[in-house]
Length: 74
Length: 201
Image 1 (cartoon, rainbow over the protein chains, first blue to last red):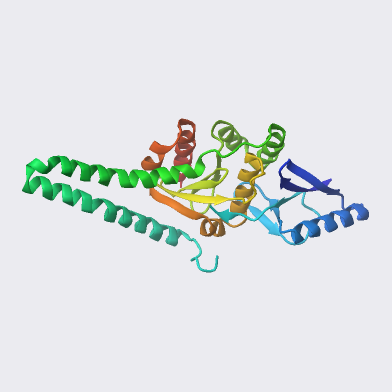
Image 2 (image 1 turned 90 degrees about the vertical axis):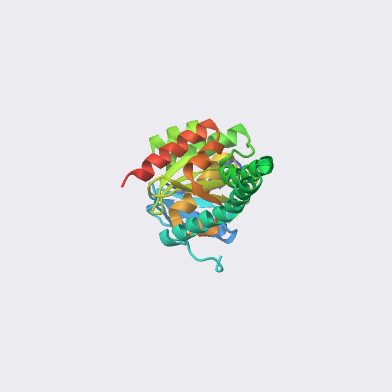
């Protein structure tokens, strides 16, 4: 089961869960993913220490996709 | 940030040299004044001493500014922080987790050096472990729990280290010992650990 999670004021919120053999769950996850990107979130797949990939399409094979806010210089 | 040159190993070396030159430009005149005053009229030694204090204090103030980037910010609700901490813990290995539990900083090796990521800033210990760059960088959302802020910065760093160092504002660049003196005791442990990593090939 893959998860789309958003870091927010609650710690994080799971927005969608999907498996590739369940088209309805995939469709819901893709819709949630696109809606969050339109809100200005960045989607990231962590690949262990030192590496993460920003994605613009929902990677269906990723176990966890994390949505984060843009950062800024302090 | 099109107006900033993208951070590279070479640009960081240049910026380190500039900081050293700026520090010398701030301190040498005071040292010169002190030396000239005492040489010409020893009775003016107290004024010379004041000049020397200025020469010592200016780099210290800059280092204090640098060390502030990793201080703790406001706390969120306990439950939100617990959830955020769980996610952050999933992103790092057990050694980084243990260090974070003691210091609230996440140690991350990068191409440019070893990073210590805090809630609203990061320290970059350059290869060799002698120089530290202190960056102000944050998530512009005050409601996020502290560990989520760290996770935001960590993921941004992992996604594009050079972009991260370009976007972040450099608060200080200088000797590690200068920054270390200004850190709270638990944070010194993290800086020492980062320096030890930075000394490894």
